[in-house]
Length: 195
Image 1: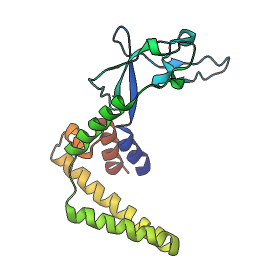
Image 2: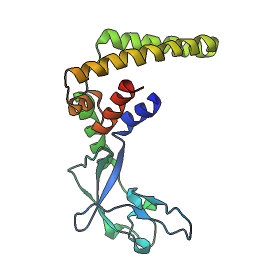
Image 3: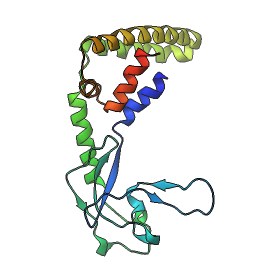
């Protein structure tokens, strides 16, 4: 269960290249007609908005994040330079602007997160080195150490989560401190409070 929450914490800020249509709206997913069947595949990848086969046609690219953030900078697609008969992913489109904008967004998120004390960072780094070395030489020792760590993590995490609840720390503050979304932070706390 903790692995799922850790993935959710990280997934809270997955970046992508977003699109806007000519009217300034953000389109919904592009659905692909693959014939009959229960599932209809869809995507929100920028290149799917090429205007072909009745799809929406992207006018502008911008940075986008799974947390809901959208970049303020807009990067217009030069439609005159694009071949309307070819898929957009085959075109030579410069994505560096939207990607850099998302990286700047994530940098701000990291800067707002609670920094770990240097001694704790050192201990964690040393622990990772020791476990990595043991994984090949002594795999059973490594697994035993990880089992013990899971117990320590669960107990200490529960203590910390209860302390946050007792102090009535707002979920927004927890999410910012962890560098993630409120939904991911809620799940992270819940896994410690209700194992």
